[in-house]
Image: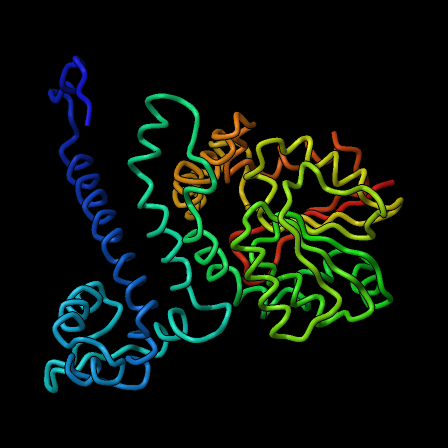
Length: 364
């Protein structure tokens, strides 16, 4: 921690009501930070799934989950006082209401608990990010792995399982028909390749290749493809600034990958050149404005800017890059796509996805 010679704030004109309201909001944020960690623990250990089976004491819940009762008892104290579980005072049992269970359990896109591991993982980099604040530069991507790889996979996997084929892909005019008929497609910054494996399974006439910097992520994509018996998808470790342009692709996908790039302008130009004439670029990226004032009413904006500060901006700065950040926004995204030479740009909202927009465009 550093100190400055700045004078203390002038308290003579303070609105006491505003002070007390901000005090309460600030304390609530610290409370929520602790609860986020408890949600992560409940998700990792299966405690929420065990609680969804019915009311339980700490002993009963620990036995269901195969965990230490003393740890479960203290965790129950946190999540019950937070209102995630309710306490039946007559029986001493803790109850997970079905409305809560719908949002923090199950192998569905509704499971919000999958976000907690990402937030908790990024919190571990505060020391490195603080040093970058002092010295400039950023935090290299490799420092975040392999934890970041698995956290991102958890965050998106269920959503894409439920929605990729039926909700996302139809947003691009004619894309499903193209994939059905057979084309050559790639996903740049593919992570663990789950989206590609979903598409390779659904569209056997097409061939798919995934590129990512992270060898651990690529290994995960290959392992999943092998487990599914897929023969029309491959994965390679590659900086997508070097995306092959021959032979050309019929479709290029990018799922929440462009805003992280060291050279997003160069990557988008490379995508344009790698597409065949009339080929489709399908970009899924963060739903936000490029203008801070337009994000003031966005309830997710504080989380998005925080993730950017702790990761997305950092990994670009570590390569002396453009540092677009997570919240590069719709206006800048459209401008960069236009500058890269794409035409027919359309921006789509996705039902049940509050985090992302889908941009579809073509190489002329």
